[in-house]
Image: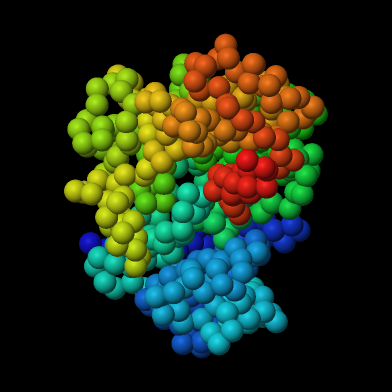
Length: 496
C-alpha cells in the first residue's frame, strides 16, 4: 500500500497547472507553482528547527495564505498539527497539547503561545515565500497510513469536557472524497473560506479544494453585506457556513433574492430548522446542501437540494461508506420510523479518544461509534435528527426532544434563535425551559401560547427567558451548559 499524504496533490498541480490560482488572500494571489515552492521552503525551515516525521506541532495563526502553507508543510513532512484558536487561553492551549510531547509551536512574530515551549516564528516562512526553493520534501514510508495522524481535532465541548482525537491522512482524504461527491465539485471551483482554519471544519475544506486543484479565497468580509458582495464580485462557486453564519445571513435582507443563484452552499449542522433551510434556498441560493456527521467518523448523512424539497426535516440520506443504525436502549435495531440512538461504523472511523478511556468506552462499543444523538430513519434511508440523547426531557414519563420545542419557537417570526433543555420540576419530573433571542418585544406567555397549536401541551416551555445573544463556543454552537448556569444563578437569587 502506498502511503497517503494530503500534500502530494500540490506537487501534481504545480506541474499540470502551475499558473492556476491556488489561494487568493486579499490582493495576494498564490499560484500552484508558488504554493509548491512555499511549502517546500517551510519544510526546510521546519527541518532547521529539528521538526520531523511523527512530531506534534502547535499552530496558532490567523487565517491567511501562510496558515494554509504551514498546514501543508507539516503534512508533507509527516508531522501532526495541534491547532489553537486565536482567542484560546494559555490554560486551554496547555490542555490541548497535554500528553503529546509537542516539539514546537508556530506563531506570529513576537508571540510565545506556551511559555517554555519552542516557538517557530512565522517570519522564517515569510522570508522564503516565492524563493522557488527546490527542497525535496520528506515522505511517509510506513505502509500503514492510519498510524500517521495529520491533525489533532478537539470536540466542541458543548455538553462536557472536550475530547481529543487523532485524524490520519487517509481519513482526511476519505472526507475529501465524500464532500467532492456530495457537492459535485470540479477543479474550476472558487471556494470562499468562511470557517476559520483553526477549526478542522475550516482547514479541511480549504485543503480539499487545493487537493482538487481549485482556488481558495480567504474571507475578509466583516458584515453580511460585505459577504453578499464578495459572493458576487469574487465569482464564488462554493462556500460552507456554520449555523451561526447562516442565521446572520438570514437576519439581513439581501439586495436581491436569491443572492447567488448558481452558488453551491454547504451547511454543516443538524440543528438547522426546515424553515431556515427554506429561507436559505429563497434568499441565498436554491443549491443548499447539508451534512450531518462528526469528527470521529466523517459524514454520516447528507442532503442535496432535492432531498430537502421532498423531506424538509431530514438531515439527508445515510452515507454509502457507512453502516448506520437506529437502536434502542439495549442496542437492538429499531424498524423504520422508530426513534432511538444513532450508531455507525465504517472504514474511516477513529479508534477512540486520546488519553480518555472513559469517553472512549462510552462512545465506541463493539465496533460501533455512538455520537450521542437521537434519530429516526425512514424506509427510504433518510435520517431525521431528534436531538442529543442527554437532552431528552422526561415529563411524568412522557419523553420528548428539545429540537421539537425549538422548531415550534423558531416558527414565530420574531424568534431568531431558540435553545431548549430540561429542568427539574417537583411535580412533573422535568419541564422544558427555553432561552430565546427575538427581534421585537414579546412576552413569554405569548410565545408559549404560540407554541400550543404546534406541540403537545406537556412540551410547551414552562419558562421562557430572553437574552440579547446566545453564549457560543468558537465554532458558533450554543452552549446550553452556560444557559443552565445562567438559569441556576437566576433562580438562586430569588426568594424561595
